[in-house]
Length: 325
Image (cartoon, rainbow, N blue to C red; front, side, top):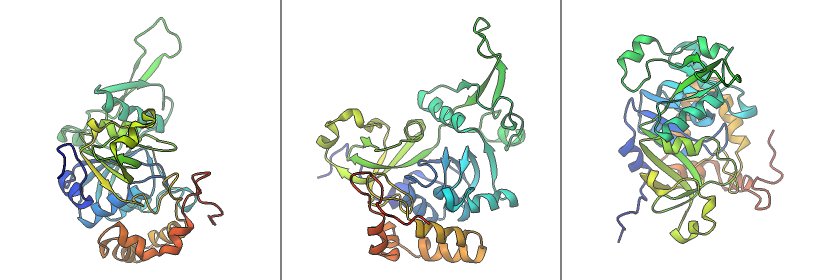
């Protein structure tokens, strides 16, 4: 019998329940670390389009969503997949061809924007980006801002420091809060109610999770309540923020999940080659996403030998002797 507070569900149902064409979506992770890739692939399979995407400094997840035609607008600090793509390839192509609209902020500003959303305040102040073109160059025109209820009227506001007695800054930048319709993050451990524990760097995932109207968590391990009561100070997200929990081992693959597996350099190198060519990229989408039922299908496709090669060394949390070339 399923308990009333049991939030475990399938990924397909979670995506169907919370992601709509044109919705405001946020995904966690950083470059090629702990991207919620299984969720990204399910969104692509369901052919969801017109997304307004928010990320901090994401890589593989951003590039595949954009390459698959799911994204219309993005607000971002940085998009890249390490040495495999200093700038995300399909992202770059979409920007150059004008098929998506982009508004950029600094890394710190994006963190503050998610934090403001999590705090329930409309903005937070910073000095980040003063003296840069982030202030001057806006990606979204005023007419679009007026037409879309979920967008702030302005990208940011530069104002005089109201506390004249403090001489540390003459000007401050106000950055607007982000409150996505839904956020997807991938974590190492979650229980059935939605309490979550991330290991290693958390990036901006905690702020992204708490800022969202709905939160879907995919996890490597689905554990009993008692498991997360031990050393509870290591838990970052309490169940009150979570709408759905999906147990998907290797749910971040081909990106890394600290203490479980490393990123797959063979996959990411091959992806970078395919992403540079429209014909090859379409073939990649068909063979690695659209014709597969789920994340297990992808793991079966790449083979157990590759998966074994990227398993984390329990001593370091990363794969030992992995050829990263």
